[in-house]
Image (cartoon, rainbow, N blue to C red; front, side, top):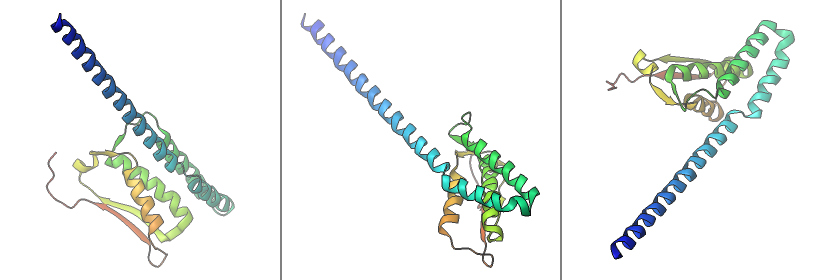
Length: 167
C-alpha cells in the first residue's frame, strides 16, 4: 500500500513539475512575441514614414519619375516589413536588398550625403541566414548616430573578411 501511495505521490509531483515547466515555456513564448511586436513597432516608425511622405510631397512637381520610384520602393519596403509568411531568419541577400530599398528612401531625404550600399560577399555568405532586419537596424543606427554631409557622405560597405568559413 505504501508503494502505491508513494507512486501516486511521485506521479503527481512529476506532473506538477511538468505543468510548471509548461507554464515557464508559455511565459517565455509570450515574452518572445512581445519582443517581436516591439521590434515591428520600431520598424513602423511613423517618423520615418512622415519624412518619406514629406520628401515625396516636394518631389512630385519637380521630378515625377523619381516620385513614382519612391512610391514603388516605399511600397516594396513596407510589403517586406509586413510579410507575415517570412520566418524569423532571412538570407543575407534578402536583407541586403531590403537595406538597399531603405537606403534609396533615405537618399531622397539626404541626397548625396548617403551613398549606395556596396557589398562584396561570396555566394556562400549570401545564402546564409541571419535574423530579419538585422542589416537594416545597423544601417538605421549608422544614419542616426553618424555625422555625414555631401562633403563627407555616409558610405556603407558590407564585405567578407576572406577568412575561411566552415559551413
